[in-house]
Image 1 (cartoon, rainbow, N blue to C red):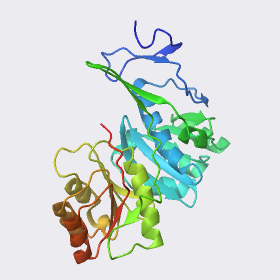
Image 2 (image 1 turned 180 degrees about the vertical axis):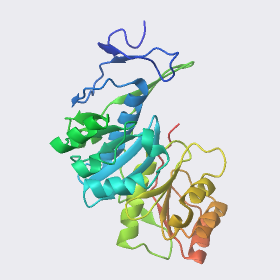
Image 3 (image 1 turned 135 degrees about the vertical axis):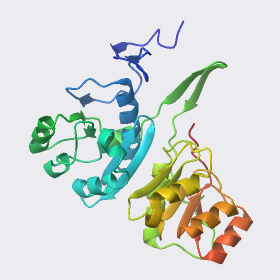
Image 4 (image 1 turned 90 degrees about the vertical axis):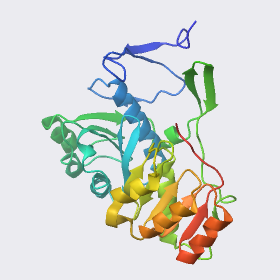
Length: 300
């Protein structure tokens, strides 16, 4: 007996993660309502699932999230969707050409002009002119009819089949808690810094293990994930001068060495699960703000 014996088959996919792997899609306890004229591949579904999970964190504002397979490449909030698009595209201009782009609000025609044939666009709605522009440019798109707020509040279990047996855990529904959210340093954050810290933390929640997110003005400037070496150095090298006065979110406690590296990149605030006394002391010496969340969101 297999896990899928009692599940209803939706369809067989062209291939799995790699072309030599077969894959099937089955019904589950939370299947979104959507419309598309394009057949979604295994990697499309993984990328869309990640994009929708992240953008649902910002369901009530104008948000754009860029994903590719199981990685988040960038995210931004804007005054409108076009503004969010421009900011998000600037996060990773190299990989954007073949990425999945997920929006929290209706895609307008100006935004549609930014997309290319390699993109897959996900949104609650599209302007008629935007659809015409995308179809003219052979851009695939998906209309998600399920409310993003419902996606955010979904409650289900996650499964991972291992050689030791079937692992089952609750879906990660973590939220920042005012009782554990704590400013640890003498230097206190501004309102803008706190807002950027919350934004960065929500994105880091979906980055892979050892994830580092650097952001400023509701826009990620660097995302480091799954790096075996110094994730902070990698992220700062990518952000370059954009790290000045930015916030840095980490899903692992950091060392004093990490803080010194961040200080060299002129990071103004660090948000982490916890911090040791020597870490906080050093932050006070360099005038950096440290916020602790009280818990971690490690991803494999």
